[in-house]
Image (cartoon, rainbow, N blue to C red; front, side, top):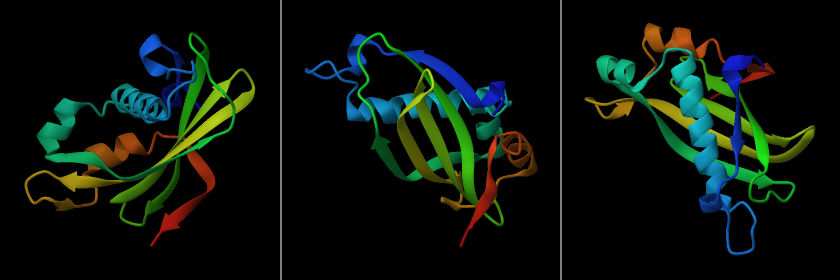
Length: 145
């Protein structure tokens, strides 16, 4: 991991349910925030996606909840690439949620690069692929069929 792959968040009032626990959908919200922050940090912002006519889309997301999280707690979110197709058009990102040294949740997202005009999944252009190469990768990196 490096500084591009981590973000620290503090759980807000709007993130918790009536029982004071971090609500399940807030994990997806925070994971999306972490992914957006990562994209920005490596130069992959909305302006580049618009210029290239390609943007990331979510095909599937899953969350695993391991420990209770409450209001005002600080969590460190770390992101890595778990798998990718040979052409880079599809990928699996994982965001881990940690409180101190304790893993509290894991969020996985299967995504793809989507051509905004052709309306289909495509390999990312070089400008995007170069930025994505800076993301921490699982060892070994799985290859999607």
